[in-house]
Length: 335
Image (tube, rainbow, N blue to C red; front, top):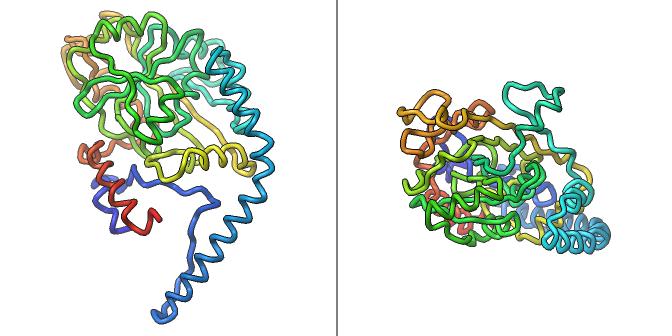
């Protein structure tokens, strides 16, 4: 993959934008040392690989036909009512995920009663990583007794808001949400919702944390309880760093993949409350806000680095990803 070295982090060698193909689509050609036979070999391999993929899809098709109407009905009902058990039915039964592994920094997994108060709730600002179209639904399943609003900044630091459903559109098609034009609008959202902030601005493949986008200084966060949420999704091919598969095919895999163990790990870090959460220093210590009420990006990133998500360099920004996408789909790797 030398041709993609431009989009590897210089310090770690991580390529955060490279997608992992679903097993049904993975290409694993053998090696041949004879140039004269390479064309014939590639033709035979591509034909065999395509035929095998077709057979696997046909085998799985009855499962899709059985599950898809249930998915459509529960999705419509959930979008209307917001009833959590409908989302749980879809995520755990139809998609086949194991119960979410929820932990909190400094609290043992077995101390369930102590974990519950740290779940996302009304008035929280939760900075989290962005990895897949499923993220919004994972956030909703984690949240305790309130609505969910997802905020994503553009490269200029202006916030746009999303629901779990419109986040799917952003993930697959970079469809922009509704602008949050002022701090007053941000404050109003806080009163009824848990606010999830995706500071990377775009998805990655869950091997690293991308550079955080510096927000416009008009946004203030003194009234929020600041937390970070580190999400890890397994298997890794359900992450979507770029839209290399159609949304329908992604859904097909979710509904019909019965062989893999699907799981999500979520870990919460909580920062100091109120005025104690503010500190003049823009770097260091465990304070999430600076003296101006803005977020201290370096401090927030540390919780992700502590969970094996290495921080990649600033050169791997949203603009770099756009260049990667253009190269990927104009190269045979994307075909």
